[in-house]
Image (tube, rainbow, N blue to C red):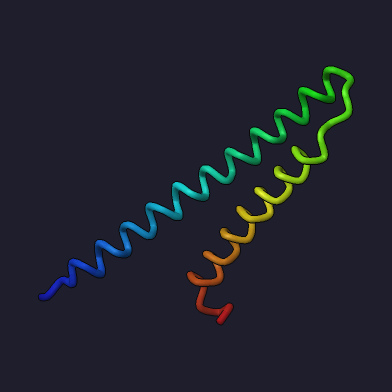
Length: 77
């Protein structure tokens, strides 16, 4: 049995980067939503920037999850 260690390392590094990146992206969305909620609680106008960042972050997370499912499920190909 032969193991291609460089390919295994490459897969490990890419999956680590994308796994951490997806978690950071989701945390950014949660943080923006929290800032928006605080502004609403303080009877201030919520920032359009916070709303946009939250929406884009969650949309990117959803797109990444759906793309992962597309890659995993063979009936989608």
